Image (tube, rainbow, N blue to C red; front, side, top):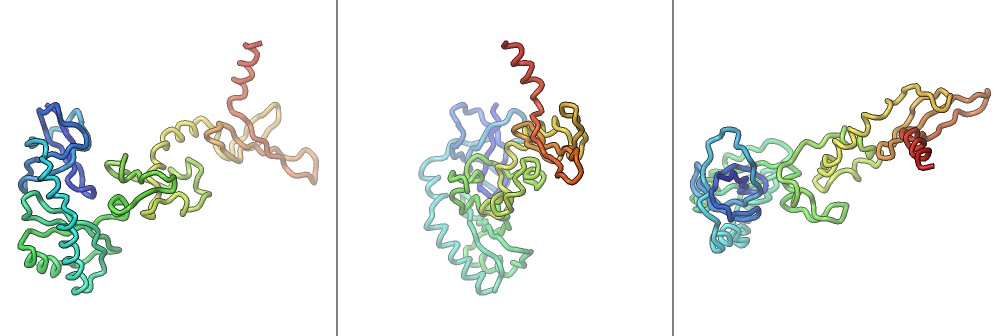
Length: 273
């Protein structure tokens, strides 16, 4: 038995299903049974264990006609236009972003962004009456909105959230600090969503490992018989800036970049000779 990761909506979480079909591959659209009925989702990966959860089975690979119906852009646009009109009527401070139709068409899930909590009870009543369906409204974050509407990042490539990133992880200011990019300013290390770039998480562990090998800021070190203080790090180069006090009164202290691996390099040169 294979355990498949299936996602129904890009702004929703990933669910696990079992399958015996060896022909299924990542990227396939599949028809599955859920607690609320049949749904079409995208197969985004496979895992080895399910953490003991009870899994429903994938029914089969979805047919082209079923996929095209679930992804009908005209149908989505009409529903979104109706919802936007009702939002304006109720004067709600929310931005509608996307909609998801259930496979059987009896459930509609509208995604929106807003700065705070929204009382949309009257909105749900009007939408239920108009569509004669079960209505759900889901408030999503700025990163989810970027995944839906974004294009390219500052690197010129497709946004990570629209490709390689399946689930958002926490990106913290510490990651930017360890990678020594804070000085670039928030605009240059933030994505189009306004949050810190997802790519800051990619090399964080590597930078942490390299940084752990370096003496801390303020540490007193001996360099060729001279006593100095560490005042700067160059993580990738594995070197530090060391400040040496002036030996003569009135002169400025000197700061020298010191390679932490210089002893090993000297030994390598001796061996080659």
